Length: 318
Image 1 (cartoon, rainbow, N blue to C red):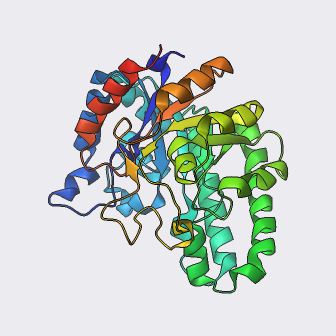
Image 2 (cartoon, rainbow, N blue to C red; image 1 turned 180 degrees about the horizontal axis):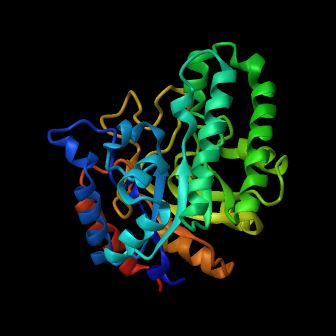
C-alpha cells in the first residue's frame, strides 16, 4: 500500500477537552495553520468529524459542519479551494456520531434528530467530494441504557428502527455518489460480533469501516477480521490503544474513559499495542485499495501526534 495516500482525521483535535486558551480551537486561523502543518507532515488528505454543536450562530471557525463552512468560506467548494492553498488536496471522508442525540427517554427524539443531522452530514460529505460517510451504528450501549433502563425490552425495536434509518441513508448515499460505511465501534449496541447481523440486514451498498483500536479493545484479531470481511470493507481506520475490555466497560455510559483507569482508551498511533505492520500487510495481501485514515482520537498533543504518526508510517511497507 502507498502510505502517502493515507488520510488523517481532524479528530486529531479534541474539541471537547477543556483547557486554557481553548477558544483558539474555535478560530479559523487555528485550523488554517493546522492544515499547513498536516501537509508538512506528509498528508494531503483529511477526514472531518461532523458535529452540529459548533455552529454558534456562524461565529465558530471549527470546520465540522456545513453551517460553519458556508459562513466562513461561502460554500463547500470555497472550503476545498482554501484547503488546496494550504496543501490539502482532498476530503476523503466525513464521520458522524449519534451520541449527542441520546439525551432523554424519547426514542422518537433520538431517531428524528440523528436521522436529520446524519442526512445533513451525508449531503455535506457529497458536496466536499468525499469517498465515504462513516456513521456509528448507535450511541454507546451504556448511554442508551442510562436513559432506557428497560433496554432489553426495547432492543428489537431499536434494531428495527436503526435498520430503517440506515437503509434510508444508504439510498441517499448512492444517489449522491458516497459510500455509507458502518463504524466497528465496540461500545455500540452493535459492537463486536453484534455488528454482522446488522450489516446482513442492510443493502449491499453499505460497507464496513474497520477500526483497529476498537477491534483490539474487544480482543478481536484485526487481521482475521479483515480477512473474514474483505469483500465488504469500505474504509479502514488505523487507531491505537493498549486497552482490552475484560470487565464489560462497553456497557458503561462513558466507555472511552473507563472509571477504573487514569486515562482514556485511545493512544496516538504508534504508542499503543496495535500491530499496524501486520494489519497493513494483511490489507496488501487482500489487494485492498480503498480509503485508509489514520486517527489520533483524543490526543492531548496534536502536533507531537502528527510527528509520531509520520514516524510510524515511515516504518510501514510502502
